[in-house]
Image (cartoon, helix red, strand yellow):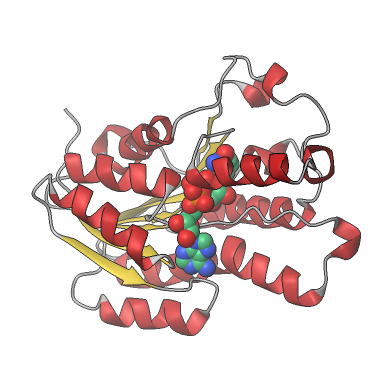
Length: 256
Ligand code: NAD
């Protein structure tokens, strides 16, 4: 049995998709939760679902792209700093590389990369003597870019790998840091994307330079909980000797 009883976990992007599924798995395993997202109403829903497992759940409406808000979050957490940090929040905004301007680039990088950097820094400051676990979320896109219009995203998501591995090496005595690399996962975000693309009859423009579905070895997208279960493993003592690892949860996509 995997137990996180007595642990406190902070999960970003917990209002939706992989983040919500992770919150529920962690709650089921007995962890108290600090849930972070921009979307407060959906975050409330995650909180209600997680509380059914009898754990403590606190929610924080934070725009992770703004460092002042990240700093304020950790100020609010003083005295109950988490044992486990999951940096999951991210945005896959499509924009043609030639049309990316400074404002767009800075916003996208602030969410997908810089927030991970600052969140990890706060965590390491708080936990470098006590120990802890970091799980960061990259993407198959970073290893095998297949979609058009995600050059900025690929840049950020490979950066996430670099941050994680550097921390794993530098603080490995006490902190385990690993990266999950999701494949196509049927989350709210991905469903929205598919709908928008279909509505605009624009699948070709936003995306996929080959037939993505045909290339899935398992013939299907993954479900958020299939990622959450790997999060649970990494967060728990079952993974006590797993550090600096890059773990695809992609149904074999990267191996094809
Ligand atoms: P999602 O869109 O369903 O959920 C992401 C959550 O992050 C949302 O609740 C959103 O409000 C929150 N968020 C976005 N910007 C934020 C900000 N500035 N501050 C705070 N919260 C913010 O996404 P998902 O599909 O569950 O993806 C989760 C992670 O997995 C992302 O990092 C994504 O890049 C990565 N990923 C997803 C897939 C996939 O197929 N779903 C594949 C590879 C990687």
